[in-house]
Image 1 (spheres, rainbow, N blue to C red):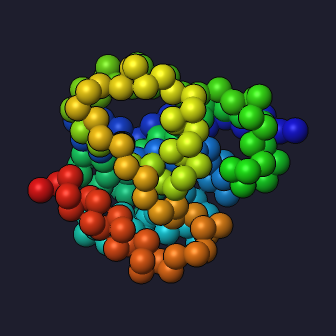
Image 2: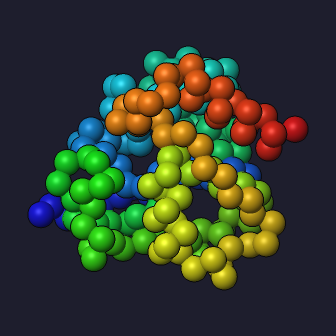
Length: 169
């Protein structure tokens, strides 16, 4: 089984929103960037919500997230997994990212959005709720992954728009 290592977060200390995935998929790991699969809706959704061109280079898209006060990370720091599916993660191989440190160094966080149910389940199971700052709200949103095909991209966008608008008001 292959040992996978996740990326550092896209974040500034000014971040107010943290979007958490579970673990990068094979396309993202190969490209060494978040949400690199061409059919993942993350970047088109963010581009629509924040008003930028989704074809901008990766660094520019990350800059746009940072400017909007949005951080991106994954629940898992490392794990063993074949392929890209969350269901293939070997549960006894899970190592979680250091959220205690992250919350300390990002004191303006108000909201955590889970990019799908797997991210939420992994976070709730493996991250000590006692380290959560009291001001943080947690909300699961539909996964932007192409594996989550039960919702059309337009419906995913609408869910994400409603959540982001509620926080940014």
